Length: 614
Ligand code: F6R
Image 1: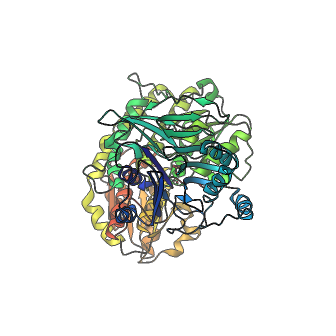
Image 2: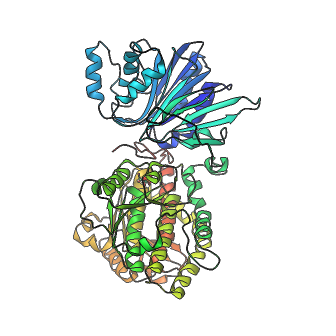
Image 3: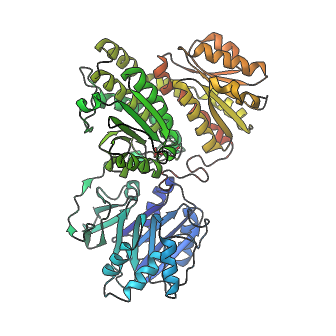
């Protein structure tokens, strides 16, 4: 969602901030702004729309600064507009604040401030912060004290950065629930540079050492990092190496991040297999702090996640039940957090999250903890809030995902969950060595099989050309590929804006079949396996009503190829593994359809990469 950057150094501050904001564009935003301090004077520049608009506005002003903060806003309180864009300022424009998250008590703070004569310019919750600091600056002598007093008044989740004319050499910051990272670098002249950002890609390629702030930590940047904990005790930040390399966040030969990330999937699968399977075919999760004795005794897993991550969770439910013989539920985090689940002490709640910051998934974790249940999370960002709030974590190893539509994280989630279910099956004595080795051998074929699927682009282009004219598309699948149907539909709707729904094929007759017409293509996911014959019946039902069928089938399935209007092939593999292949042509189909409709594939309208508010 929103993004924050801040910089203190010798380089052109406006340029560093703009580049940082561009690196955060993928998070989704609808306006952007920058506050620069130069010779004790604060200048705020804001623009609705893309960062290019902000860049133009800055060029017209022809200003720069010695320190500065910037922000990309994804509207929550108040429409996307220049007025509602951050930074927000106090009445005389001497204090500028950028903020991610939500100030839950902003209405009561606003009332108090209005009572003291403060006038609000925007509809945002953020604007209370510069006015609060202004109010406290009338009582205390330093900005540090006024900032501290102000943040003590805030309720909710936030990451905040602030600059002022009163102490123009400092950027103040605080983290409480929303991520914020500090970074340090040395420029070519050996001078220290300091950064802050809500997400690590903003620093690339400048900073190499980072510090992930913990909740309640606050401080300021000027000559060095000045950090305090929530008890106001000074602490030394323990800087770590930034583990993202430039190649991971640059487009390289690809036109879009989504396409790049789709093509990275075979290598990611290879990496996961290498990391997780030892030479003597043991499955290992080195980072997992939950002991095998504990996991062997778990009576029930409740998986809770959102969007694509929940689709991966739906497959995991089948893995856990079929391989490890353990009762497993998979639920939307947004439902789980409010449904007061009945769960015994031997229940473990699993969170799955690419970003590790999804508000509903995090709330689900808090819900589990409030019931004293252990939490295990599968996360792509091991420094995220979800990772920190969990008893055990499993790293997805997908590398930074920039495209808003999740692709490689999904594959990494499904594969890690599959490997974890095999690990569980082993420690619970539900799977013997030979069965395990057979599965692992099948999995080792996956990277090459995936590469093969990704080369079948001619057919995808041809189909995308047809789909781009449609207004509605249905996806059908069963068991492991019911999730593929859901995920295929989610991909298509989010980036091409074509209405798409995924259904469990058995439910088709119970309503959705009424939608069939020549204008509503149906994508039937029917690789070889137990469900294939059932899927053929569904396909026939569509054909009997003159519906157009695109089928995702196993190679050389001439029977199905003869029944469908078009087929997309995947190499033959056991059904439970097939969902790692069947989704690939559907990702490509969504990508090319969206492109042919002129959509902004990496930044689809209204969507944010990480949904940090409810
Ligand atoms: C879809 C998509 C979203 C996310 C969902 C959860 O392509 O990206 O549906 O999967 O917002 O996000 P994470 O996995 O970060 O918790």
